[in-house]
Image 1 (spheres, rainbow, N blue to C red):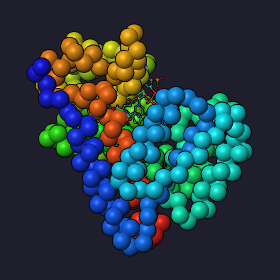
Image 2 (image 1 turned 120 degrees about the vertical axis):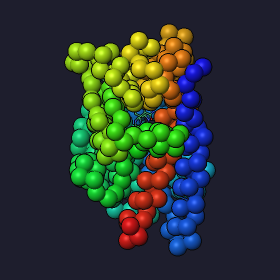
Image 3 (image 1 turned 180 degrees about the vertical axis):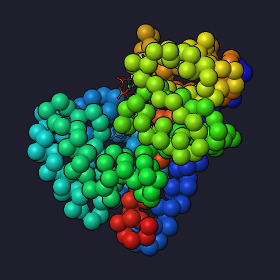
Image 4 (image 1 turned 60 degrees about the horizontal axis):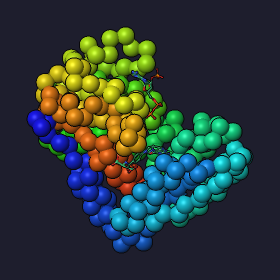
Length: 285
Ligand SMILES: NC(=O)C1=CN([C@@H]2O[C@H](COP(=O)(O)OP(=O)(O)OC[C@H]3O[C@@H](n4cnc5c(N)ncnc54)[C@H](OP(=O)(O)O)[C@@H]3O)[C@@H](O)[C@H]2O)C=CC1
Ligand SMILES: Nc1nc(=O)c2c([nH]1)NC[C@@H]1CN(c3ccc(C(=O)N[C@@H](CCC(=O)O)C(=O)O)cc3)C=[N+]21
C-alpha cells in the first residue's frame, strides 16, 4: 500500500481525550454537560449510531439522556418534546437523529431546536454563523474532516479541493470549511458532467455520496488525499465507503478507511460541541 492510512480511530480518541478534560473542567465549576438524543422510529442503523453517541458521552464524562419514540410519532408530539428539552436548564445539547419518518417535516424539527443547543449545527442561525465565519458550533462531520486532514499532517491552504455531494449535512458545510481553510473548492453532484476529469485535478477529494465505487483509481491524481464519508453496504453486506479503497490506496498519498475514518470523528466532534453548548449556556463562551 502506497498511501498513508488516515486513522480516524486514533485521531478521534485524541479529540475525545481533549473533550474529557474540558468536561472535567466544567464539572469543577458545577456544570455537567448533558446531551439529549432523540430517535424517532426503529431504524437499525440509526440505533447503532445513537448507541455509539451514548457510549462516547459516557467515556468523555458527558451526561446523556435518550428519548426513543415510536415510528408513528406525530410532528406535534416531537415538537412538544423539543420545546421541553429547550426549556430544561440541565440539558445543553439536543440531537434529533436524521432522517425522521415521513409524517414529520425535518425542517420544522431543525427550526424548533434552540440554536444554543443545536450541537449538530443544522439550525439556519448556526449555518449562517458558519458561513460568515463567526463564533459558535461547527457541524460535526465537516469539522471532523478538517481535523482528520490537519492532524494527519496535511495542509489545505492553496490546495485544489473537490467535494462530491451537496447535502446540508455534509457536502455544503465541508466545502465552506475547506474554503475557510484557504482551499480552492469545487462542489460536484449528480448533475455534474465530467466528474472523473474534475477529480483528476484534485489534491483533496471528499466523497459524500452514499454509493459504492463513486471514486475509482482512474479518477485520482497521484499523491491526492482521499476523505471517504460514504457509509454503504457492498454485495457481501460489508460496511464500505464511496471510494474503491483497494485500488485507490495504491495511487493516493493518503486515504481514510471505512469504517474507522470519518465516522468516529463525527462523534468526537459532537462531544466537543456538547461542551461548547454547556459553556454558551453558562455565559462562559
Ligand atoms: N461518517 C459519517 O459521520 C457520516 C456519513 N454519512 C454518509 O455519507 C453519505 C452522504 O450522506 P448525505 O450527504 O447525507 O447524503 P445525501 O443523499 O443527502 O446526498 C448525496 C449527494 O450525493 C450526490 N450524488 C448522488 N449520486 C451522485 C453521483 N453519481 N455523482 C456525484 N454526486 C452524486 C447527490 O447529488 P444531488 O444533490 O444532485 O442529488 C447529493 O448531493 C451517506 O453514505 C451517509 O450515510 C453522512 C453523514 C455522516
Ligand atoms: N442529527 C443527526 N446528526 C448526525 O450526526 C447524524 C444523523 N443525524 N444521522 C445519520 C448521520 C450518520 N452519522 C454517523 C455517525 C457515526 C458513524 C460511525 O461511528 N461510524 C463507524 C462505524 C459504525 C458501524 O459499525 O456501523 C465508522 O465509520 O467507523 C457513522 C455515521 C451521524 N449522522
